[in-house]
Amino acid sequence: MISRLANEYQITGFFYNPNIFPESEYNKRLTALKMLADLWQLVLEVGKYEHERFLTLINGWESEPEGGMRCEVCYGLRLNESAIKAREGNHNFLATTLTVGPKKNALVINKIGAEVAAKYGVQFIARDWKKQNGFKHSVTLSRELGLYRQRYCGCEFSCSQMKHLDFQRAAKAGGIGVNNKLKICLTRDEGVV
Image (cartoon, one colour):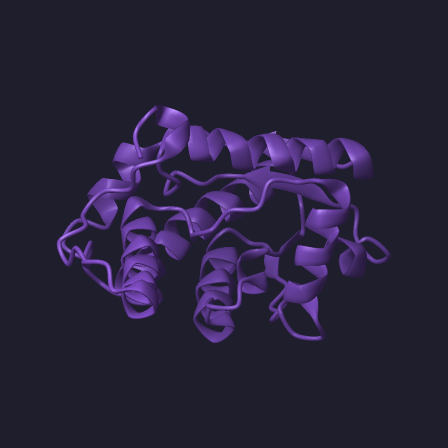
């Protein structure tokens, strides 16, 4: 995405991801982005980590499947803050990397992005960045540069769903028991497996 935009735009990155849980995961992703920004000599601004704000906004949508209403609320929160930051920085355009993800609905994201951008007087660059091998390119680039690459969208609810799917796959392959009540994302870096 950056390489596609860099020829036409002066890029400023903005990392605002209050959805990411746990905070150690947030820090891993931020560190990887800072490495990339340094390498590509990009300006990078970092928003506040406001996980409680995210939880308040998605209250009642926790059990939605990935891509459901919980995600739409999350996209709205993150894109709204990005549009505010664009306006404050006197930027004329706003784009997002959200559509790189293979499970991300670009139509939904681009609609939300256009709405919030218009609200703050900036133009949204609507693209489906996963197309033209965008996702594949991002994976290859991450590997080549040795960047951390996450296994789930970010919030504890998507993590739990991903882990549940992993358990189901393992159960089919090896006959282990499946915990259908997995509710929290536990990570090794926090000393819990």
